[in-house]
Image (cartoon, rainbow, N blue to C red):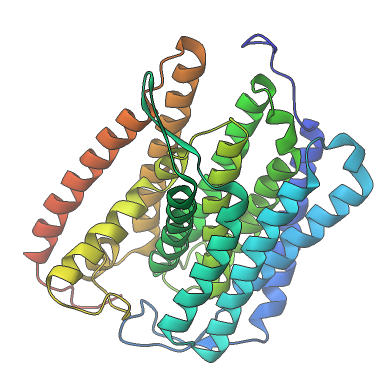
Length: 376
């Protein structure tokens, strides 16, 4: 195994940057096309938009990613180490989830149908990459029985899917968080894969993360238009949010399987989003409300209603929180690698605790404020 500072590129940097740029370019072109056709999201009480808006951006993201990944592997496959099987399973899983979301964008499927499909597909993916052990601290490793590992892994996947979906209600918020997650995943693989015994198997997964990040960047200006952030030209829809949620949750399990990251890493990537989703579900459950019914009670929605209706300023705040928690996760992984002291779970618990206190305090303050004159 190489020394810590003798890191080699898993994939040539020029190829990675080219794939990133190509995905962004193709995604932007396809976004223009989907804006001219496909389903339209009409204004509704729980929405944050006032005009009919195309909601096929997720299809542009998926198609751009698939096209660039396929072409890159076709022409430069010899320069990409690793198992194509892992990449195929991961991208196939995410794509099937995205297709389910696309159908929902058109047909507005019952929530119970969507959840049943999610559970079934997540169980299949979890079968290949179930968690077998959990690290809770230095020397504290708990072996997980197969059935518990399967169900726990599937639960994590369902949580990430719906976290991205629930938080995709403000222009730019989710698409930016997804981009950060994909880029940080790519950074983690680049840093740690050369130092891990089986890290070289993640070459295709690295390419997927980079291409999807590029596709997100290409679509972002349509979701959060420069100069007019309140007026999105297109939404990613359930197709985009479920595709991204599946990738983030699935990649967490894949990098865990190859010893590059831990199952806790996904928690760092999505910490502020997970806190908002889970605590909002708890609040609604305590009130006896239907947790499957759409609503506008997430903290970010209350912020738009009572504090500041700017989607741009809200997105910047959430992106900053996501980037901070993600970098904390990378730092905890580096500490584990350099000093052989695994504090990732403890750091994540502390981070979630801080975000939880912030959520509770801010929500209480916001609910004491009157609604803004002009709702977002």
